[in-house]
Image 1: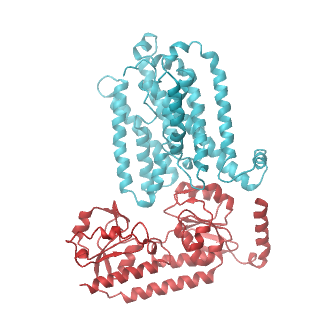
Image 2: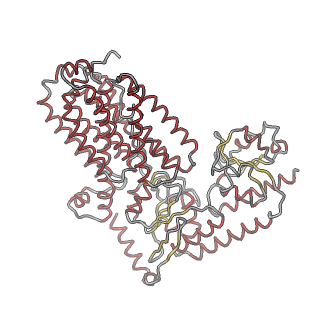
Image 3: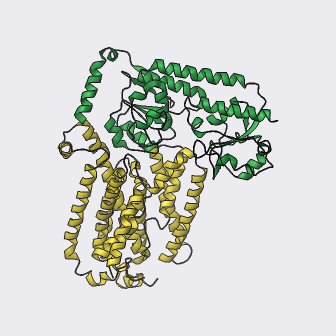
Length: 344
Length: 295
């Protein structure tokens, strides 16, 4: 791939121009994205298939209000919006990490087969008729199993390269894919809709937003300080080694971190597609490829995108409910194509 | 709008001072949980088309405030406001209706959403009729919860009597080997634990794929040809769509085709575990009788 030294984005070379000058813009950009994220969360809490007037909403936020409004806002909308934010943030950060790690713009959180492992775990639990806690637990175990499997196989007996990791991941993903198809074919008819919703990703599975939110906070705390080293790594392992970065340990920790983040996201809401691929690219198109900005911005923008998408999924054709994965693609594709078209 | 609903509730509460003093109404649902209501359910949400149909049959139709997509029987069920589909429920609409009873389809509704309804403090009745007898007992239990015991008892009694009459009439009928197709592409049938197969057995038929472990097995045409059914019955995409059953017309090796025992069964008459299954059972019994006459 000719772009091996361009970071992962179509505008990867922007980093060389702007990496020195970007730090002053870091704070205002992140503040702006935070403001947008808060606005999206507020919108998600205000809108639903049942209309809650603004006065009622205000009363609830002050700790009063009608019981119905309280239940709608406090029990349903706030936990779901927070879960959507955390899941989107996790997926976007994980996607950004994978794109740097594999030095491939097509990388996303699922490219190494992690979603397949999680899906086999979750669908297996559904096939056995186990409870929702088991479905989440099995998804997490499946995701970790897939991570370890790809890690071990890519290591192999020879030397390790991103290309080798990518190929191993893609083939393992194909294997999981076959198992998923098999499970869908042998599954009892009445369980198929639930299985499909899980595969498409749906926030109705989110029971509590807290595990995902905590994972997101920890992820940001751990990964953002690595931004400078990742900037160097994105320009190629040889250059990174010359500049004093311990390439192999960095690559493995990025792989493990991205896998854990994706596992947390998938455990919360199934395999929501597209957020992890498109959000880091959008941000690179807008702000350049400095990982010190891209990683925290991915957390905010990924969360915002999924909060907005989930709000639409709940309300667009209410009372019918769409799986959120449909909306992330419908929102993301035109926005991304527009940004790509506008760029040179 | 909310004020109006509150007023209606208040009036409803004032309107039945006597009922409030009565002892709690308790039933055991199909998940073996005991459900008790202090007074007859006034605000019911049904989460599958079959459940809604059973509620109407039990005389509680005017208490059904929420139904799901495809709740099309009886006619009045079409006018009940929707709360999503049985595979994805709009939780906000359910909450808004403030139901005192939610009837859940145990195997059809998504578990995570049912869990959520439970954690929101809703009273749930899990419905999963698997035998003809369950249809009658579900009617009685729903009638008990809704305070419409008389209607429910009458409908359940008629249902049981009509089924018993069919069972008796065909108890000694010579067996006919039947293939029942419920879907095309892939071809799907049912095993012996399915109500359709129980109707076939009651009419003196033998389901050629009844022994397969899966409730709804998927088949290829070869296995149907190998099974050599004497009669083939099939539904279709509508109440008059006979293309599925006609697709067997070209297979002259089949005893069913040679004797012209290719029968259409309107899907609505047999697809839901409700009192309408009497009609479906009669249609199946008549077809099998025709098959016997053509021997």
